Length: 252
Image (tube, rainbow, N blue to C red; front, side, top):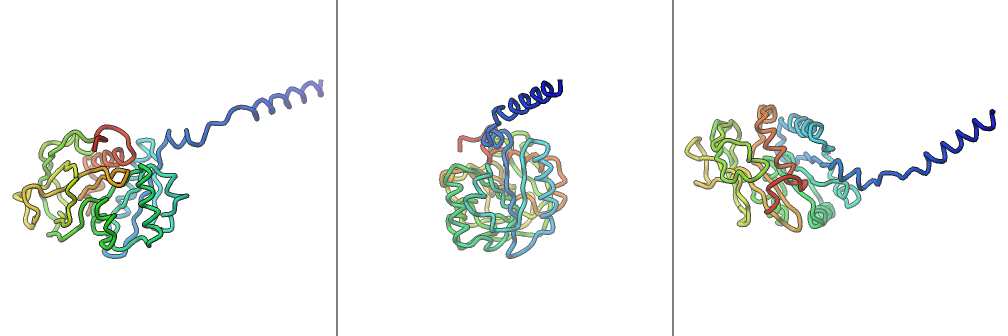
């Protein structure tokens, strides 16, 4: 009896050991991963922790793995290829060295996504490729104040749920070196606040295909209160979905 029992256990163990494993690539596809990068070499936004917490919450609620880092050393091929998209959250200044820049360019060239939040446009002024990826560079801003965002393209997951006019309080960036190929999703109405310099089509959120991949940018996200706002959270989620290649809005 003891021999029979042991034989049965041995066979069971062998059967279990021969069971086909789930391919790692299938697991990655089932739960996309996003890397959120928040290194600063200039102004440091006090709202970065709130932004990180919000993006992690959105990940938990939407079957996304969200990793966060301030370490530019993550920008190597073996690490980047684990991620469907990279988010620059309120980065400022020169945050990557030349080798890391090349690794990121190659990553985007392989069809991956980028999402820039607020001060991502205040980053890497001496790297022309990045300026074209993010879509514009920060020029200036007035004080934080209430203004109205106007949705101009509601066929995108970051704007499809928004009202035509969206009043909100933020720090409103003026931009320079605006790329000509942007798909403009929302503008800020300069008649509703003081200090706008970009005119009637003052960009607030946009996306475009670039360098073999895709990029989404939102100018929102200066304050802690922004990240506590469920509407802005959903706006960020739509941007993430575009960046990782999910949902509507992928035609540009």
